[in-house]
Image 1: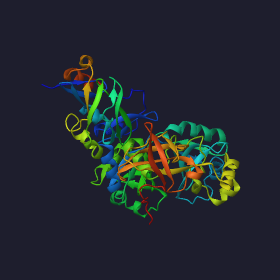
Image 2: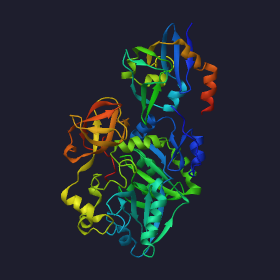
Image 3: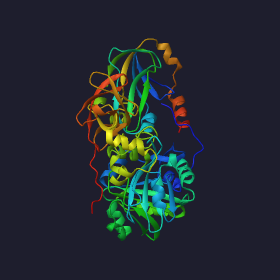
Image 4: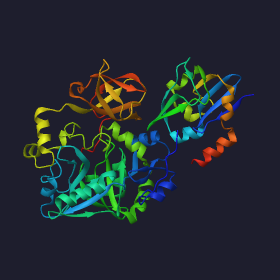
Length: 370
Length: 125
């Protein structure tokens, strides 16, 4: 066992609060971030049972302005932006010419602009990509002076209703401006845990005050990146750089649902030809849920074989699911082995452990349905 | 009287006669967090000092546990199979991993005593 080396890391506006709360800080995507406070297991279960507060300020936020910003942005993503209603958000991804995924992101339509949230590790490249491809068609404002907090869990709505009554009416995947205890914020009803919840964009200068206000509610505890990862894995959601990257297409990643009928037909995004061909003819491998049958977790890069021992794929995210009470994983397998129920083996420390393909998610999504 | 020695990699070995009981330190379990699975060696397995002898899995990651001394594994703590959290609760006692018949007691001389280990663990925070 070794200790992580110290690096020259960026800090979020909540850095001193994390330390005050006893967060164990680790390097993540160039930032010093809390991996846990009281413990991943407790934090994970608290989020599933009550409400957890996550600092996701390391992620990139930007506004896109321009009369045809939506049509322009559609040239970079397979998601439907033109027909995205005002006040709604959508999950999509930047693709490359081979149909590979450069990053996944959330795009929202405000009254007079689009709002964008991208991954921390990709944000500089994403913003450069937008600038390079769309300069002249839209104006981008990178929001480096805003923090992003996520409040997730079955009691998140109760907490928000107390502090910001207007939030109670927000449908799933919507965006609005609200005031939380007098602090002007922009909130989306969305998240990354499979639970109902909100992501709240707030000026960096008010971020700590907002976080303290939320943490003062009896339902809320601070949650680190460790539980964020186990929660999203149980929810069957992709982690960029692990489950999706430049070598995986949205179709291989089982993200066809993010591409509307119109865009499947029209194309007009990088890699459209590849992706349309995959939609029509199928893919040779697919991202699936994989449930190890024993107690040993299978981590990323574990080789997946068929029952006879022939390699058929690889785990991309794997670990222990505290709500499931056992190991859970996802990864890519040859399409012939992608049907739920298919028996597989996982090669963990040179031993073949039995597993099977299962439908994702591992824990039922509990998004707000209205 | 039993002597407890430590490695720089955060294992401990309690020596009684030619038998060493091996586990990970309280500092190590704190660093790892909640343990969810422990892969123990087979009884009868022969290991050299520094060999990977067990693996501990936390929610987040797997970490190797190295043999502090060489010898033959003579017993494992089967209770950890059902309850790996025993290591979190009592790393230096009920959370022991395996017992080893020590092949060469001289190998113990290279290990840390408690004071030296405490200094190391304190510094690595």
